[in-house]
Length: 167
Image 1: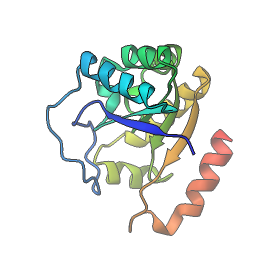
Image 2: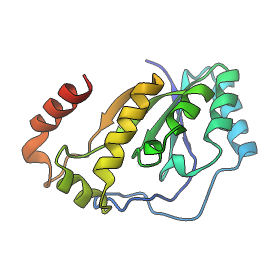
Image 3: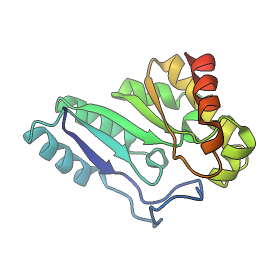
Image 4: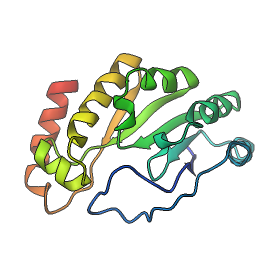
């Protein structure tokens, strides 16, 4: 099993998920600290690093962090809600910098349920655009789902939806 280090990039998010236990603050990782952490992961022969948050894509440092990690021989991935990756060009920029695997948090294939769970109207459409952009950029993607009382009745529907649309 590969060792993968977690690097929290920011402590804030642009969604308000009803089940989130990650308290928000204005804290953000700086590049010098990120490089020291990457050097530590490389020294301990880690396979890679997972960029997390809050929502890590709210930081402008993702390409710089990714490029540095790749130069140290680390595989780079990100846990994201995908909202920023709906912007044209950002997925391509991240992939070109070396962040090539994404864990996109989507909790329902039902638009109204997803928007309710994230507390942001339109979050479902942003996530779908992000998945399309990541696919075009050549990234690999996993879907992360927090099972809860609002989606537990249609988990099978989620699997069918994502495998049919993106499989």
